[in-house]
Image (cartoon, rainbow, N blue to C red; front, top):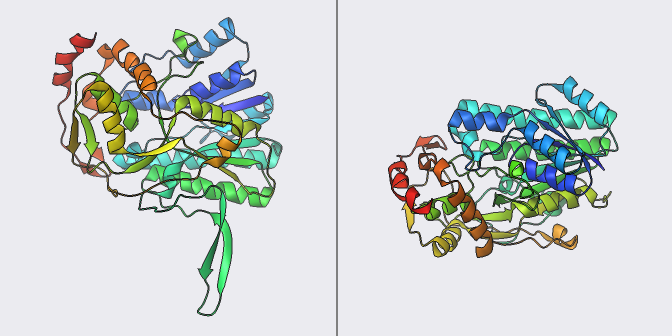
Length: 406
């Protein structure tokens, strides 16, 4: 299969690209390098040293299979460039990962919010328009977010895909509608993903396109079997306030002797999935038989739901770290129930892993290996959800403990 991976240089995109290439697919990466530029702007580099995309691709083609290509292209702004790339490559499928994926970044200031909405929505619109006009047989797999549902109290598991609702049209009779479960996004990033869901529904209903929307949970971990095949394939390890997901952030803090910073009560419940399972789910979605009666195919790409405090306690047990409760920089409910039905991937035979000590051990070894690259001052929240939070000043403490673990 010939597959385009947009955003193929990113945290999820690069492991996905390698996984597909290793499975024998011919892959074209389209990426504009924005994730690397944002890291430079934020002075929040990956803990792991990552080489250029050109070096990554050349290493794969020279030492493994010659089935990777890449093109530097901003698909939100360069419609003609995208059309030319698709015409020349002739894909069977597109995996769309080219998005600004950080909720805190989208809420930090006007620029971050504007960029998130502009980039995320226009990039998918350009892809959908091209598929509808020139590439009608192409399957599009979009990596969405489970966070579009919001994090108010959900006493029952959120169903997967289309569901039927009854609502009161007047006092005497009710009416029924079949639609996705209602969304309630809590950030501009999640709002962009909710809007993309509407676009996908429109293009499916109007043009009958083959579209898949993956509602992904928080991704943790760093490496996959393919990223371990060569030192030039190492994946990003983000631990900063913007892009560092909670498991990675806690693991870094605990491994270097810092307390684990839990926001507020810590009873915020989230869905999680390991990066190695993310890439398997994406390939499964690419290969799954189309269900013509199901509308846009929606998958809940999650392995488990846990409270933030439960994650902190697991990491604390593993590292021996203390847990420190700090003021919550986010306007969110701090104690609620949240669970989702995620049967579709399991019905395809996938068995995602859960938070386990053997996987934490692998992550901790990465932290120890690159401890000299740590900058703990990027962990503490500063301006998130529009209000300032005092810095912890963790860098001085880090410098005192880094020699012990080097």
